[in-house]
Image (cartoon, rainbow, N blue to C red; front, side):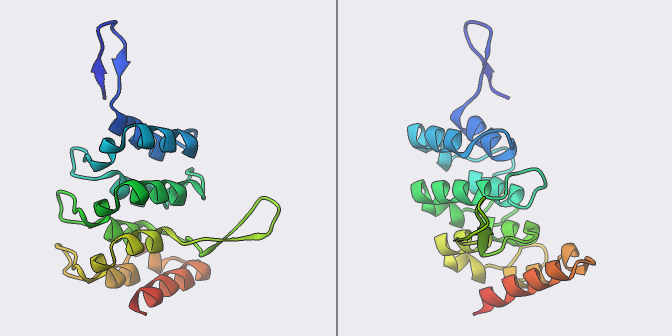
Amino acid sequence: HGTVGRDGNTVITAFEGLKECIVNRRCPVSAFQMIARLRPGALYLVDEDGNTLLHIAAVYGSSIGVEEDKIPLIIDEIVAINGTCASVPNKDNVLPLAIAMQNVKSHSNYKKQRDGTKLEGNSIIEKIFLAEPRALSVRDTRSHMFPFMVTAVTAGFRGKNKCDHLQRFTNCYSLLM
């Protein structure tokens, strides 16, 4: 990725830098925030699959190896600068909310701080939903199901872990309320 500058070094775009901050666990949230604030126009761009940075964050929000608290903070930053990106479908006509619901494993509403006390916060799904509530009424173009239906029947729901079952049910139920 990137282009070759006059000096022969590879130069990456702000969009590519922001994307790398999402997918690379070693990239701190502060780097994402700095790039996003210096180059806010990058938050309006899409990749070759039509994904905004919010789509990408929704995918990596449940990935193993990504810091648990990193993606919610990145989503906060994206939505603060470009709240409209939650209503932008990718090339497959899939909204970020649908991607988050398909990929989320178990993002509880309460995170523990390092000292063990609870820190109140919203889940990835809730953050994206609050940015674009109308996305809940948009059916998936392939399955023709609403996002809460997709959450209920995704492969992860059939797992052996009872906590995952409960979290999926909770996610589904909270979206219906």
